[in-house]
Amino acid sequence: MPYKEKDIEKKYFTIGEVADLFKVAPSLIRFWETEFEMLNPKKNKKGNRQFTKEDIDAFRVIYHLVKEKGYTLQGAKEALKFTKQKPIDKMEAIKALERVKEFLIELKKNLP
Image 1 (tube, rainbow, N blue to C red):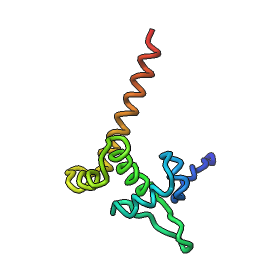
Image 2 (spheres, rainbow, N blue to C red; image 1 turned 60 degrees about the horizontal axis):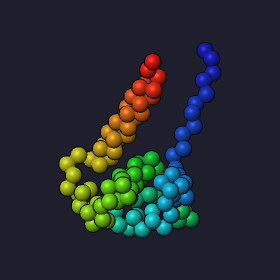
Image 3 (tube, rainbow, N blue to C red; image 1 turned 180 degrees about the horizontal axis):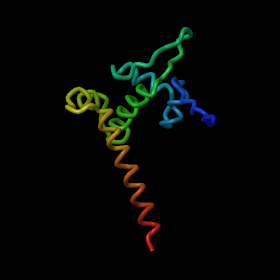
Image 4 (cartoon, rainbow, N blue to C red; image 1 turned 180 degrees about the vertical axis):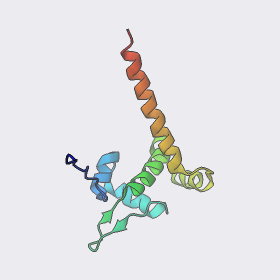
């Protein structure tokens, strides 16, 4: 049986990595952490934040509401509170639809 290398998947991300991912300042992440209960990364012994993929997904939902949709912080909190479907599920659906759109655009380019 041939040896198959395992993909190493990172479990924790620093606040700087998350800030770079969304092109925001780390201070914004710290501020939103105080404003939104769903954003609650673990902290190590030194007090450094350790973001999991779930934390990043939660941040992505908040980012989408505030930065992309233009919600106020209070409006985003209310949208998160009163939504019947989990916001993370909605974001996953949006990402899946974006992948389908990219696939269809690429397919259209390759037509004769």
